[in-house]
Image (cartoon, rainbow, N blue to C red; front, side, top):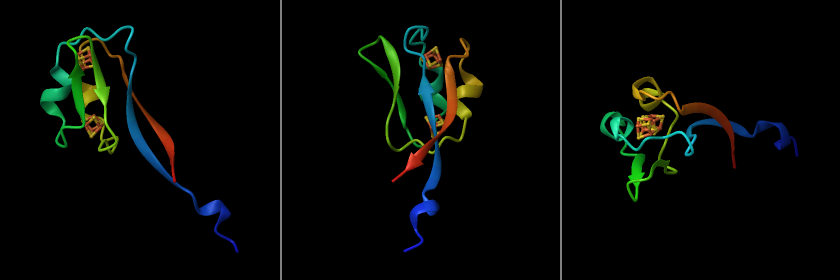
Length: 72
Ligand code: SF4
Ligand code: SF4
């Protein structure tokens, strides 16, 4: 078998919750509704996120980062 090295990479947004001010700007621009404000405290990203970066570009606090994750 030679499938070991074919693990696909997927991008996803990550929020620095400690610095998020829960303004909701990210949630407004996400085309997949993949980021939401949780309990009025911080933004949270769901598995629907495809890492397009729209939320990160919109965040006034610059606390969203797009990273590659292993897609299993
Ligand atoms: S990276 Fe794109 S898909 Fe993911 S939460 Fe942000 S706007 Fe939505
Ligand atoms: S735009 Fe930035 S600061 Fe505002 S809720 Fe989203 S992650 Fe938090």
